[in-house]
Image (cartoon, rainbow, N blue to C red; front, side, top):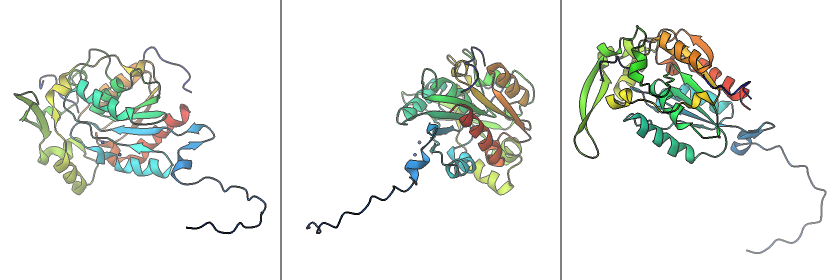
Length: 285
């Protein structure tokens, strides 16, 4: 287990506010020892008990496919993995949705969030004793009363505001809201500079817009205060300033790893992301 239960442990400038008859009896023969278990059932448990389900939550301007490289590696290691679609409509609503996803998962869970997804896992894990670790991948780690927009503006370095376009979308109860998309011509440089150009073009075409309300909505109580956490800092991030990622991770008391990567670190450096997740899994079993 983590050595202590801490009491402490995407993005947008402040201005822009899923998974016949019976045969004759044969002569008795000595029993044959059972073969070792194999297959999916065996992959879910070992001498330490059941393996946790690793739930991967994407952030804004991305979708669940951004976890593909990480998913393949975790599955090869024998772990059950789930990567639901994050609605990106509002922090409270997205958190409630993730809780509904977790309710259908049996056994222990390790929650992983990228970018805005970090804020979502921080709320969804609150009070859920099955969540053994939180892993923040180039992510927001908000405390109560903080928003993603506020945290992104806390340190200089984000150039996101110069690359996004606002557009209107209908709200379920009537009226309209505002969502943001990164301009396709600027997506590669802004979001995924270390991803091959052709792959970044696909990411730009499939990006999921985020509601401005989601980035401006303040967080509730933070689960990282009672659940051990790990953080991967992307030092070439142009969405969330690396200084902000580092400051949040230190405040949360997270185990910190740094890597020279863009905001799309799960796409460009899936092996590093997987290693951080497995570090968290091993430390909490």
